Image 1: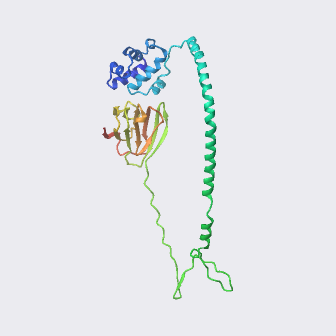
Image 2: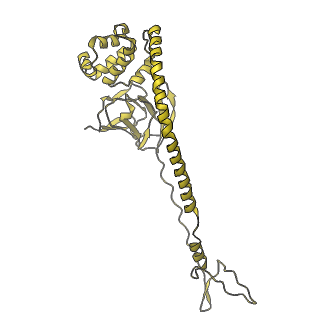
Image 3: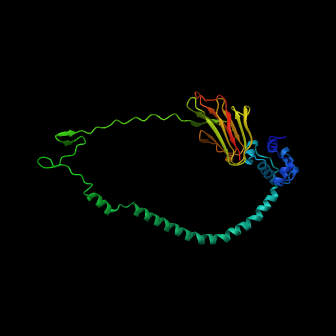
Length: 314
């Protein structure tokens, strides 16, 4: 059995489905499903149905079809008859040209009124912005002439005005009251926070490095918003201790404590699962994701190995 066919068959068995169940869901005949698992594409009714049947089969067993075809390479399909393709193209060109010619006058008729409306709207917007940026001269004059806001200085000997001094005090009974300034308390430094940074890739796996204060626990939480195949292992790959294995459902939440051995996470459908480390979300931008979360060198965790803290399903 080929790699692509074995991948689909394993996903079907993990969901506990038989070929008859897949046939009922996809409406694809059982003999075609068997041909896909064996990669005997000659059995299929035509070249168009090869990729279409594979994608439909993959979606039925919870596997992302685009990731599947990308991982196992392009699926070979029989070449399309060039003579038939040429005849189809020649027949379809003329009606398409006629349809375009019919829609062109209508399109031009509506384009000019729309352009005129857009120009008028832009002009009106510019006028409104100009009016809002102008300063009200009445308010400015009132502010400048308000006698309560004006400050006067005592006259100097021989005329003129004495400039006020910031260090001058108030005379009370011949004594001068001096102003004292209380010292400002220096703020204490905030405790060191947990930081998560992307630290490169290893094949299809994205590596994340976690730095945390010594002795603090690092929590890895996974929240599900839909159905997705999820695998979680204690270690750097799927050969480590299995912490979670199976399909998720909307509302499922899982919490793990990151240990010194690291944690390997594999999600079959990333949009349905959210992975966070101490509240910080991590992603690789793919539909099917593989993460390796490791503690930074010199960071000590409160537990030597990862473990499942809690799990809630709806």
